[in-house]
Amino acid sequence: MKLNLGFGKDVVEVNITETNLLGVLEPNRIDLGLSGQEEVKRAIRDPIGTQRLKDIVKKDEKVVIITSDITRPMPSKVVLLEIVNELREANVELKNIKIVFALGCHRKHTEDEKRYLIGDELYNQIECIDSDGQDYVNMGITSSGTPVDIFRPVAEADRRICLGNIEYHYFAGYSGGIKAIMPGVSTRAAIQANHSKMVKDEAKAGEMLHNPVRRDIDEVANFVTVDYILNVVLDEHKTIIKAVAGHYLEAHRKGCLFLDKLYKAEIPERADVVVVSPGGYPKDINLYQAQKALDNAKHAVKDGGVIVLVASCIEGFGEKVFERWITNAQHPEDLIEGIQQNFELGGHKAAAIAMVLKKVDIYLVSELSDETVRKVFMKPYTNVQTALDDAVKRTGENSKIIVMPFGGSTLPEVVASGENLNSVRTIGVEV
Figure 1 (cartoon, rainbow, N blue to C red):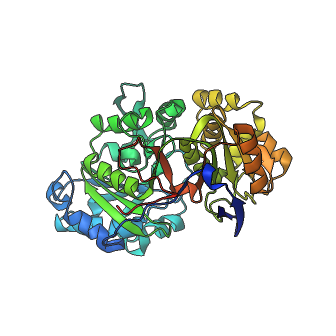
Figure 2 (figure 1 turned 90 degrees about the vertical axis):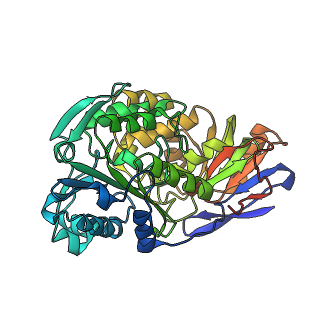
Figure 3 (figure 1 turned 180 degrees about the vertical axis):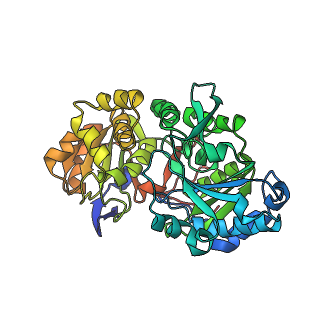
């Protein structure tokens, strides 16, 4: 069976014996309703687990709205307009509203970037500020030892509203919810304590209830009240296709369930070999970006198997801290130990790759030099067919193979027989 995979701005072809092919995983097909601003309005009119926002907030209360920084795809200007309109209906004066960009450990914005994120209308009327990890209030410590150090304007507000988008997060399970608070407006020490739990087995994409990172994040709500959230799910064009609003846990969980219907792909068992592409340019422009597809693919492969990662990586590593961590490591274990001792953004993705390498071999089909690929502890290839043939030689001629053409947005999940499994050649069903 011949299959095409995105590779940079081109496609590459791979031929797989049909008796070996366990499945081709693609996003599920689901019926969508409203989209964009109209979907945001619908969610605000129909909150989950709370009253409408206009009935929660009182006229003279100080309100902070926490939203994502410029590194995230969150369409803040669309959502903020509707949130502010709702606050106006509660007769909240604009001088009592503050918009806070959740930087986590990221750099500060320029004023032009702030204006771009929230739009001219709101920028000219409402104070908008970056979070600052040096100006915080300690509000306690979680049961797993994470200090609840919250940016002072957020900690001292009467009402807190969290915005964000929901997508799979490779060690927090899902983005969104009160992730806007932790790590969004928390200190570096707090983020370090929380994110160091990423090395635990249950700290993985699509895992919520048993995920130590996510449980720690959600526990922060015991110390700092979140009055309301509005989260969105975006399609590949960054269009809002689902919005959920209301209670910080109940609404978030509904959004996560929608994401699962769209992007979770059921498989009957793990494969010996997984061939995965991020989907081509720009998702495979560098190794830093391609890591997301690799991390999703790990859920479809047996321990001791092989992942064939098909990613151009024409621009190399893609992030300086990530590159420094990888090039300074002598063994994958160095990266895992290092991130536990000193969490650093960029280094965390290097550690995530190392965690995959603990369980499987990675054959990288790319435009990187062989020397560079070996430096990241992978086996270099320039041809996907050669890489797959070598993988099958290692795992056996009867090896089962799964192909993930859109690895960055498809999350495999093993479902036992009788649990609504749709295990035909292409696993993608009407929901």
